[in-house]
Length: 117
Length: 115
View 1 (cartoon, rainbow over the protein chains, first blue to last red):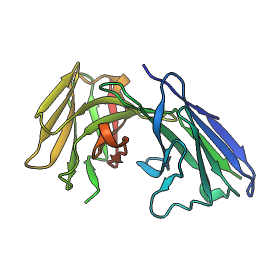
View 2: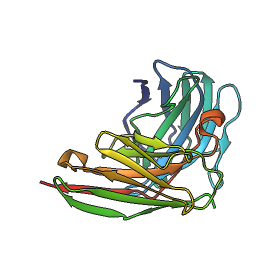
View 3: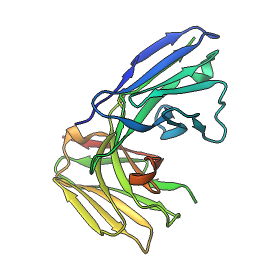
View 4: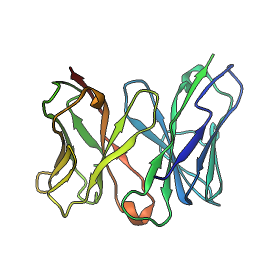
């Protein structure tokens, strides 16, 4: 099946630093990628939708200057958490929507656990 | 109107039993209804999905029942096994196949299957 690689799987950083998370579709092209945030025992909250070569669309309440998204190619999207603070600590998950294909078109990465000290 | 409401929040089932999780929605424009399984520290994985022109879909031990008039759909896990213990999310989407795959997730159900 199609694979979405998300890296790193876990990151610990100091307050005020920036953290970059990568999401790659390894064996397919993704016209659209999505970034979610998930707090413990809660649902996935969509943060933003990114399309290759264009600006990301952010959900209401998500700070675009804090969560920078770059969708540089059909196989790579990055999320940068700028000036991270402890309240940004969360599980971040990306998903990639496969261009073409039949039944299964959306694939999720394995997530990144961000801990801000 | 964009919400998907899921119940129960948690569920304990004996091995071999049937696990049933329910979801309800308001927006009749939703045209794709998947169920995802998520293990701790991992991303969600697609279990099974249905479109509103079908009332039931079965894949192995997993069945989706869809009631368009009631705007409800449910996941049935037959012969539940301890390995099924995970969090399950229903979701809904508008124009999933043509418009990029944006999903609205339910609140999740933590399933525990006791041996």
